[in-house]
Structure formats: C-alpha cells, structure tokens
Image (cartoon, rainbow, N blue to C red; front, side, top):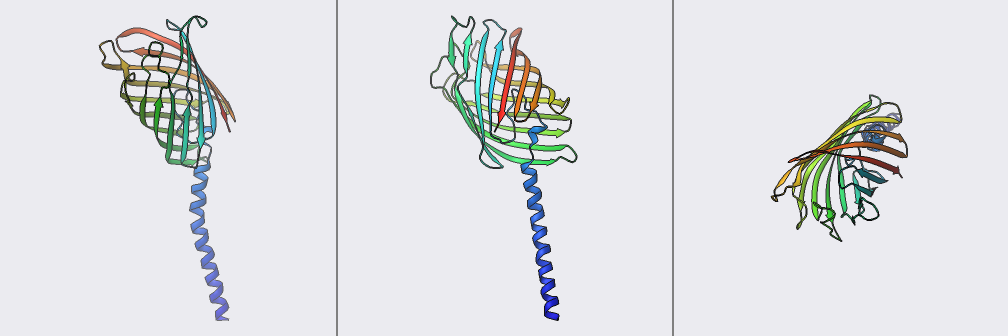
Length: 266
C-alpha cells in the first residue's frame, strides 16, 4: 500500500514539474509567435523590428526640380523567431522627362536582423519589440551624376516598436559608415507615431533626421523629412500612401514627394 502511495506521489510530483517547466516555454513561444504587425502598421520609411516573410514595392514620385520616379523592391525572410534577413534590390530612378531624362540603378543592400526583445500581451493590447541589424550596401554600376550621395556603405542600427492599441510607435536609429566615396558617413534617427482608425485602416506621422547630406564644401550637413501617411492593411496585403516634405541644410525650399508602399506577406 505504501509503495502504491509513494509511486502515486512521485508521478504527481513529476507531472507538476513538467507542467511548471512547460508553461513558461509555452508562454515564451506564444510571445514570439504573436503577429504584432497585425496591430503595428509598418511606416513607409522605417524598417520593421519584427522578422517575417514578405515582399515590398516602394514608389516615389518627386515633385522637386528636376523631378524623378523611383521604384524600389525589397524582400524580407524569416529564418527563425529571432533571426531574419533583408534584401534591398537595386532601385530604379528615372529623372523627368521620363523618356529623355537620365536614369540609373541604385545600390543593392543585404542585412541580418536579430530580434532582442519581442513581448506581447494581446489581452491588454500591448507589445514591445527591439531588434538590431547590420546591413551592407554595394553599388555595382556607379552613376554619381544621376544619384549623388549614393555609394558603398555599412550600416548598424537598432529598430523598435511599442503598441498600446489603438496607438503605436516605431523607429530606428543608427550610423552609416561609408566604404570608399559617394556616401557621407553619419548618424540617422527615424520615428513615427500612429493610430489604428479601424481594424484595416491606420494613420501615422513619420519624422526623420540625419547627418548624411554632402554640402558644397564637402562637409556633411543635416537633412530630414516629415511624412504623414495612411494605410490599408488587410492581411496579407498592406497598401500605404504618404506625402513627404523634405528639408536640407542651407536650402530654404521644401522638397515634396509622394510615396506608395505595397507589401505582401508570405
């Protein structure tokens, strides 16, 4: 009788320990598997701090003189819960007039992303994310006369997002180190604040400042932009449009351009 009681106690203790060990792992797995971008709509000009399988197409219509049209494809791939890769395919830039103006393919870039923090509590509508990335940029066919300020570089950055549904914010900050000529080494900060208007619509304002402008004397200067934007997000599709007002040190004009972003999750 005592043996049976002892055996029952040992089985009960083992089951309790298994449950205690499994629950934290299950909770952790649920945190990493929560689809935060269903609630935090990606800003047009900010890299998302979550890792996923997705394709993007960005289009910019510049109203400055000379005007231009830019088409830029991008691919994201998820290798694990924490690890992801990014591939920026060469963007195509055509200056107006489109048939007679100069054009060029921009550099391509590839980056490795590591998610440091990914917590969420969807019962309370909150989430916090922090990711670091190292990205290399290479220009196979340099055309500095068409695309000044472009070239080979290495970028290290941190990306973050915070959700208090229906409000959310996201951002990135880092440093660009030029490799060779063309690019001005310098820091950058980009952040946005947004709100879900409905389950499929969201609006946000994005602000960016960097010290990567090459001035006439060869020194680096400040530049940046503000871009209000609105998005329609019905998974797996995301369509966003924004109107960008850009500024540059030493230039009193505001440079206006319209951005479109199309995303498809896989």
